[in-house]
Image (cartoon, rainbow, N blue to C red; front, side):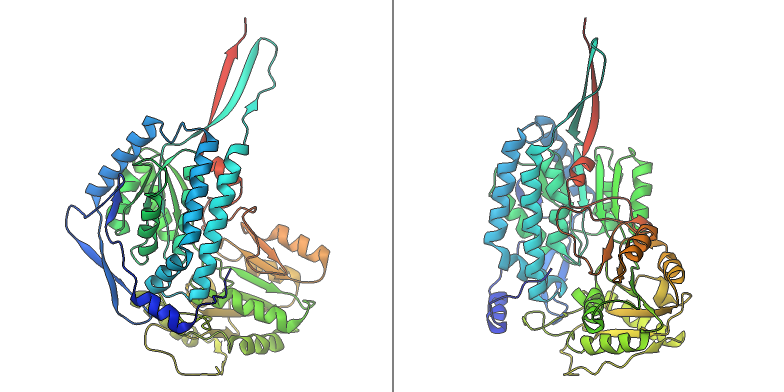
Length: 500
């Protein structure tokens, strides 16, 4: 989702120059430095300038935060508060986020390089998620088991306890709210570990939380690196669950840490190499091609559900690729503060080098790189990569199998439905998939056979807050959004009352 801002490029630049940043950890209602005194730099990838030096938390802060979170949970000030009261507080937080939505969007744009229009859309989605979740929490009922007259069986839901939310850098505020909204709504204490690549909006969120009635210790923010503070939180015997969005590699580590400690729950939303299938009877080829281009180039391709594998029926593949490249001409990277920029900057040098390496490898392995003649070929200074399309890709190529997390599209052809399904399912991942056809029998038939947590038919990434978001296979096992999420952050308890 993106929002077209009414603020001009020059106005965004002026606002950016006037920002101040909170850089300290948020522990038990206070902003504090790290015990080690260490910090790390937040660098604007569009300019290379250092925005701020942020506190780098470690095991000491993790232990302290867990102790405060546990104490807050056991006190019952939040965990046993009436759902209607928690709802009011979370709605008040949503109102505060709405009041500061342009500032929050600007923080994410500066911190990780996404275009300001896209960042505004992310904040709008975050507000929608928080309000939806808050409005839902006092409308969920327990159950009464079908027992005999000599007993009463109650099935109730209780909060888990202490939840650690570890969120990625590509949609910083939106993913944060996706994680913390259901956890807080159901009465848990939450410790947020933002990515070290995009911590600024999380710390600004903490300032807003401090203005609400959420008790101390119920929500805390620990910026830092996964190998330090993240690992310490994951190994803690007093943490009851980890909610994570990020790479499959890190998701596997967190699962191991859960097993090495107290067998805490792990809700994982990991990587994706998502197939986007275009059949020969797709409606309006130029329109579908434009949407297929947006599916991979939105947010610089730094999207877990990016449509990075495009499977096109060979009968229409060449004209479809030409139409896609034509659409990509207007999806070039530019200054993230310019409302006209479709793509922004790559988050950091490490990610830039990784993407560039895959582009070089794709050519080396024999894929054909299509020419995209942009209206302007002059890229601004900074970490910018233009839309890149490879045709004639084969399933054994690295660009067809590995998650690149950048604006690189792998196009493969197929001749029939069975081949399309086989190609789509030939992946370790199963986060999202799309298909385009006017044959209603075909789209239902194919959708049911795709090994994916989400299937988009004649659209890409269309679901709203009412639909669960998550994957299968090595894309993880957790779900964000929808009423289903509220159940994940609660424990089922059976109460059996004998009647004499």
